[in-house]
Image (cartoon, helix red, strand yellow):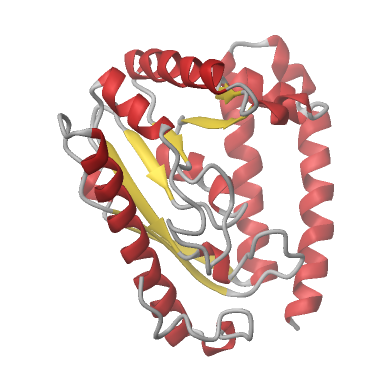
Length: 260
């Protein structure tokens, strides 16, 4: 049943995405708000496909930690494509720090440009840092929350801060713009694994954690960020595996008892 659901979902997801991309091409002629609207329409449809084909939903915890003025940085665990499909549900009109190569994808890349993301060239560290600092300053002035995946890429459920270290870009953003960092833990990789065709039913948990206050030394910022996200992520994965026993699989047999 899970295989059949995954096949059906992938067929409907890609067909629906192509229809949205092609059908809303005229939106490029209008201000950026039109593309934001199209994005919400697309993601709303994807949410329906996930719920009724995959049997996959999500829950959000800790929303009280998000500043009301939208001037903050979210440092999120990144286990799956799933969370990227939920950012506009969570934040309304966020800006996302992503790799520059995504802007080269035909049509989809144009949507990203119109959304006004912070694109970085990972092959040029100096230019990358400059883009992050300038983009963070601009988005802070515009009152748009900024989302960054501090490990720099999607990671498996077995990866930790030791196997996939956190990158220093998050500290540059924090230091240069005096914005609070809100850690975000999640367990999406158990249901929608990295690079996996198979998607499993259940409920993904997103949990915002207490903000990392401004003014801390760089090393303390990184340690606080890693400790909070990694510890809570393991707790959320254990919670999911206890609620949905079919998630326990050979590729992560020790997760329920493993240390952080």
